[in-house]
Length: 203
Image (tube, rainbow, N blue to C red; front, side):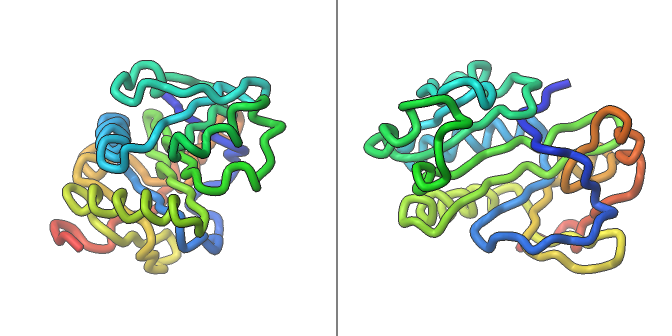
């Protein structure tokens, strides 16, 4: 099973919906769609992709056209960033854990939500309010219009219009969770999570 990231994953879709950064985008999609989206995003924006395997590893410039080099990892602290080449000096100088938030301004943080036998986690694109991040976000939304739908409902019947989902994610017939749980909490992935706000209606 491929997991591209995960911070502390003891949250599930059963937890109350937390306030989301308006610049952030969350998508329930498959690993194939995640790779496709990033390849197209890199091509359309002409930005670079950077990868840090863990907190104790530095960021390295990756070949965006070689998904194998950046899409396979089970490290919970894996970090992928997309940004402009002229800003890379801010993040290439030290290990991930020592790069302050201020140095990541202008980069969009990318995380694949993961998948197990019961559920799919939401892939996440976290952006700040910088000009570069806004530009990348706009291009991402253009790409999502090609194959994703907007809006989900949580298990408390709250509409969350900032989340996206795809037909391929729906076809897996798995639960959708904001975060996948692991270890002793993995059983919670069997719980019902989010579901589509509208089916077969492109936003």
